[in-house]
Amino acid sequence: MKTRLTVVLLCAIAGAAFTSPTWAINKCSQPNGSFVFQDAPCAGKGEKLDVRPATGHVRPAEPVTATNSDPAAPKRQTEAQRIEQMVAISQLERRLKDATAAIHSTRERCAQEIKSLQLKKQYATNNLAGATWESSISSEMSALATSCDTRNRELREDATALRAECRELGGCK
Image 1 (cartoon, rainbow, N blue to C red):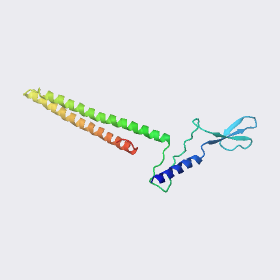
Image 2 (cartoon, helix red, strand yellow):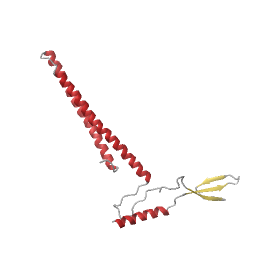
Image 3 (cartoon, helix red, strand yellow):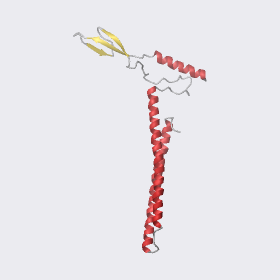
Image 4 (cartoon, one colour):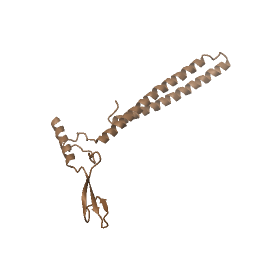
């Protein structure tokens, strides 16, 4: 298996080395003495210039893929694609961490609000006004519980979607 992988990598490197690492630009002289730069060969007098990027290194136009002999071999990424993938994973992991924190803070806030309403219920007196007030507090607690449950469900669904997206990119645990 190591031999096959080594051969595939050597073929990929050799293929990248023999592809043209420069862009052909032709410097053509005009009858009035000026120069025009174009990618097509000059009709009259001119010279061919080889242009390289400022770094001196050329990224291949397309990522080099494994040979057809091993379809299970992974595709090779360019450095820019690898960095972009790492940044995307990092952003997703941060958003997932924020979503998890939001779930916990929402649960804590809801628990505190329900607890404060329960404490209010204790002060209801044993008369018609107290019973009415206790009933309104119970309705408020029910509405709060429903609201908190809905919000927690939404946050959990968002977190699940973020985890799935992160796993597709090859990150997140």
